Image (cartoon, rainbow, N blue to C red; front, top):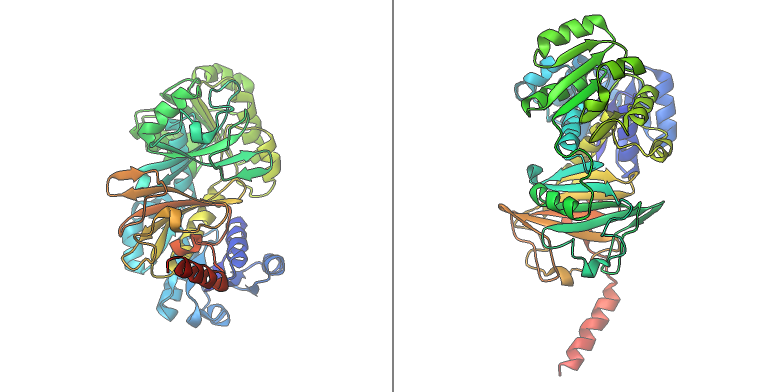
Length: 471
């Protein structure tokens, strides 16, 4: 597809990297010529220095033949205007990053009136991810499928867990309600088979209904920290923390916010009167002790400085009862952050680029199925995708055991109506199903992509052999 990305900041750069990797024809636009040059050279894409709201600039980018325009500059208004101009000029699909809470409250109306295909608010999306982790503190990462009814939980196998050394095919912990999807052991990624057995320190991802996952974590001895979260401390209150505080209060969780900017504190007192607002330096140990950090069930470090958030999270890890979530803004240095063994890490920019890539994949697939959900996991080495099965899908009725799946590809679940099915070899797809696939292969756009490309000559030979045997 032909795609224009307006804005070469961190999000624009991340989106461009992923889209160019999937062989889309990408053009980037930014007012900063040096940024444009750096991105265009790094990812072999076309670059134009200029303003995305300038019709001549859009014309130079061939807006008339563009399939999708993605506007992710730092200005909400510029992003919205870019999308309106693109829509009026070419009728292409448009995506705008919109961060201001004023616009978020009426985002459905804005989309309809302006004809924008999708708006995304990185801070709001990140807040939704954080509240899932706070509600289920045993997991390091949680990814939702089937509109939140099914979830994938990532966790680290603790020392002494009864799951250690037990072969998957004989597991007494994994059953029709819980499926092990992927394992990370050091730098190795494993899509497990029946002979796989977990070791202490492995990072495992399991698929389950949230209600069933609770009993699973109890059985493997993991829900030992704190239990249910009833209180949260937030250090630093930007837009993400503002959204998060509202969500936590609505869920019945007590919120204490420490913010260094006095004017911001005064605004928060009127915006979130149910929260306890403290004007102070959250990086000061004396302040944290005075505000009784050790009595809190969870902590979210959300200052504007990544290094400060990391240090606070490391300091609080053994003091907070259940959960510590660290906000990271930079996309680089993933290996360094991973080596620090933080509890849970959230990156709003990464969530944004992942959501946009999901939309692009959904547009580019064939008629048999739609990409409903996409997550790039384990340093982007694993993809978890949800496909909606249409009547025209060629795999309907075929048993999974007969599908000849690509290597390192697992059908992790089938959502059918109100039922969640952990699939076996005799199961098959039906129209209307949501099918969840976990794979180390990249670029799946249609459910048919899970099937291994077979050698036609080999297939003919097998057919002739079977025919001769049946004579």
